[in-house]
Image (cartoon, rainbow, N blue to C red):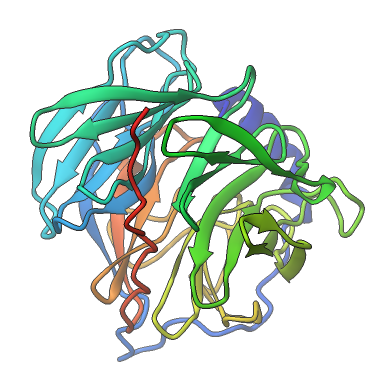
Length: 348
């Protein structure tokens, strides 16, 4: 997920010279439906969607993110065919330009789990009643980003501080894991997180790295084992190209991983379960030309809906409202069922 738009503009321009040429990995070819892209829906003001959540009720949800003005954030709901149904205005935000909401997950009974940035809050939204409920507050200066249910608890990344928090059902927030591997450069930090039940690990994306393991403008996909509620040793599965800024991702039933590149390359990358890069779409970086009326423009996530992944197109740098949309990309396989244990609820 992208954050301070002005800050991103400066760094993206500085990194432009380091973009790599295509390496020859695969892409869509004539007659191949894989990666065929269409517009699922435009995202109304204040725009800037960062993640798409597909609920167990079959509806699609997204929040609006920082727009640099005093508009409160909204939670939006669509049918699976892209028809916009309803929206809810997020209460209690500081309307100073930092406000944003991520529909990060859901509870077992269907309440949406929201991460709100201006107040560093974890909220739930009951879509049946429209009632918001504040569950937890993250530490000062935290930027809660993505969330996944793991063994018994919710795990949340911090975009600003290289930390994974564990949120207990009581709403208690714990600093569960921290590592130099999760320290980013110029504020481009830790993004997506998904628990793989079979492997008993958390997959975590990192936009830039400052630990010296690679050049700072490369990103990472990590595996972090979880054993008896404790973190194991973090290891690298994949290292991105400069300026990719890997963000949210989805996992297919095959185990393949689809990662949205929110940086200059404007691509969707497909990885093997072990992190080997299989293909990029579009094959050439920069333009985001995906064959649909709207190019990739800061694509921030890849969430499965049937055999498609829904990509939140944020247009963080350009700020082009006509590009702020959810795009649907055919990938030819169904997604892995997100981990949603019986304990996926809050009772603060």
